[in-house]
Length: 83
Image 1 (tube, rainbow, N blue to C red):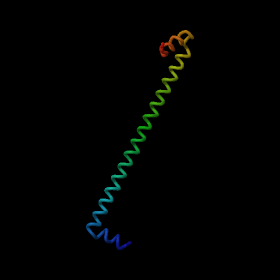
Image 2 (cartoon, helix red, strand yellow):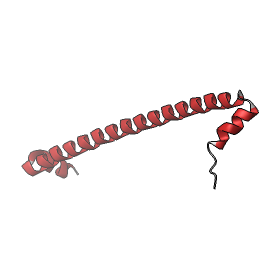
Image 3 (cartoon, rainbow, N blue to C red):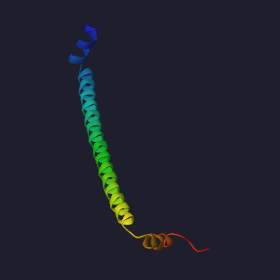
Image 4 (tube, rainbow, N blue to C red):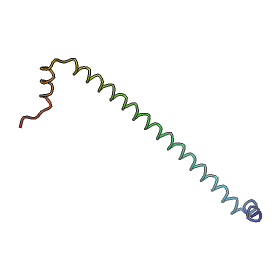
């Protein structure tokens, strides 16, 4: 094992392998950290959209709840097809 490490340090090919390995590991870490932050960003946006949709649903439900029976019926007729 020590012979292999000595070859890596003293041989130009070994040094090149060390450099390429370090660059590869650095690139992989950068890619992973970027992907991780991108996933967190998407999840945060999805949660914000879900909260916005829930607020809209509550407002619509309250609006419908305050309508009279006839007004509700008229509003529902807009959603029904007349075949």
